[in-house]
Amino acid sequence: NAGVTQTPKFQVLKTGQSMTLQCAQDMNHNSMYWYRQDPGMGLRLIYYSASEGTTDKGEVPNGYNVSRLNKREFSLRLESAAPSQTSVYFCASHLGWGDTQYFGPGTRLTVL
Amino acid sequence: QQPVQSPQAVILREGEDAVINCSSSKALYSVHWYRQKHGEAPVFLMILLKGGEQKGHEKISASFNEKKQQSSLYLTASQLSYSGTYFCGTEGPSYDKVIFGPGTSLSVIP
Image (tube, rainbow over all chains, first blue to last red; front, side, top):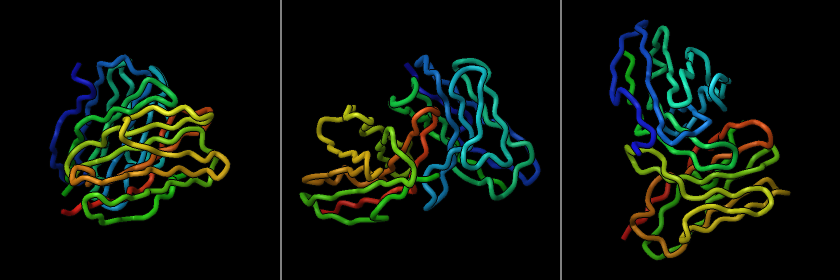
């Protein structure tokens, strides 16, 4: 099993550009998450998907959109990138409530 | 709402013990503990569920006080490999999302 995979690993964007971060899991998990991590701020939830076909906002959803393409894949889109979105983005998945979360390796995004 | 963690940072010598606390203003139904090394993804340590069930590594111990809405992670006889940032995550009763605290930085020195 590959676990949770994310692409790309690194990305540099200019202000106003758009991009999509990809995440896939092969553990047949129902729930998937996108977090961003900034120094001193911990892991902040952007969006999550409790099951295929559903998505909900987390703590910091502004400036982002998500798509739960199927049970395996959950993508995060930045429509018009801003320097404030410079961060490390982690995707995670788990079977459901009370179950272990598994994290992907992260995407390091810089917006100039 | 993000849980609160204390202390923010702690430095230990090898062999010393530490306690990391996590608290929430909302009722807790489960608490997750993860450790993150610099430049890496968080790694699972333990989950504590309302009612007393625990899942996790044998060498890690933690407590969950449902009434006080608090959890504590106990690190005993610390090793250099324990260094990293520790996060607690909390879940409510009926919605399926995990919210993490700001983290506690732990450094173990020889």
